[in-house]
Length: 455
Image (cartoon, rainbow, N blue to C red; front, side, top):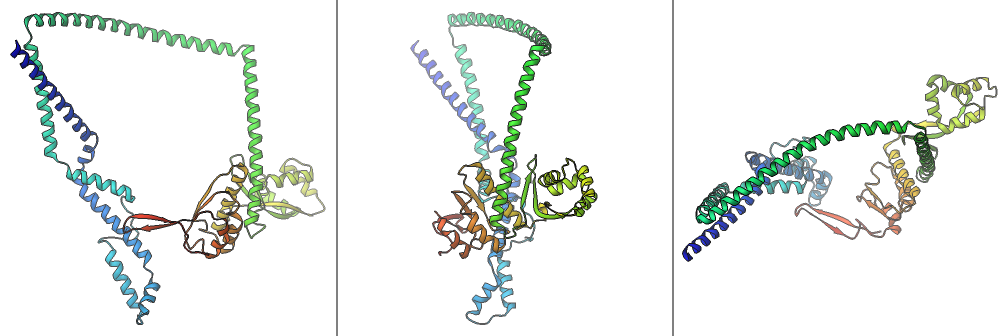
């Protein structure tokens, strides 16, 4: 008995070890299937992908060198020792650029992948993982798992056949009892499923009946009153929201105009703004119209377009002056007006006719107005602040916009935008200044606590 017990214990130990091997192998296989395998299938393309990424990286380096090489700077440097001709400078520039230009590179061509440094690193890491993958090791791992699975099945068979007659009888008896119980449970499940299906059908019918009854209840007088009350509350809330929205839009209109007058040197460029229901911005400037000109506009533009041309405020002034409420009646009143005097009104400005600089100033004024209207200390961050703005307005923005738009302003600028003149203007308001230095040779950016120059 002792030797049989020891043998059985050893077989059980071997079974546990085989199960462990099988589980461990399966985990590694699963990690490969869920991770690397989709990319491994495309391993024939990795070489071309790697070459393309390298080609695009060299193209970026070529563009960088092309931007940094300045013909005049090279000429000045060479002329410090001896006089060099323009042709020699051009030849030197062409030689240097040719050294960096990848073979087959065409200027203006769009990159295929156009990946960031981080994404290129990830792709190259995946390609390296594919190249380093050991196929033979994976095959051995699969075979190892299969062998372990076969061994566990064999040990199960051995353990089962090694039972004593008494144990086998008890096992068979217990197995039969469990099978019988399983059949009973399956039978109950089947009956329950039939019952559940029937209940679902009854529930569907009941829900339909309930919906019809609910609709009938809604039609009676009491629920109709409740519905009307709810509808009234909804309309009241809508009115309140509309009123608040209109108030915000009117205040925003005034603040934008005020801010524009702080910055614009053209005082009469935009003197009035109207924000529509869909938050469409309509820009106007002050204009004097004679009654003859107003009649000409109505006839040539049409009544609806005329109303848009002079704006809601302009229509309000005209209607109050002539005691009318439609453009049709206004036209009749103008035709009968014998005084032929001038009226101070507004003329709509198409925002697309503004220069890019004027549009940017308008957007800055809009940001300023939104922050003022919010009543909150909202940080303001702006990149390339003077992109399309002329020198005169740059000074106005430096003096009036940046110090007042918010308590915390972050400006991302180059030394060509905020130069020494504008830097001196905003210097008293600067709390911190940083300079980002990009080192492409080491592929990193360092941060220094100073600006391009000191004032």
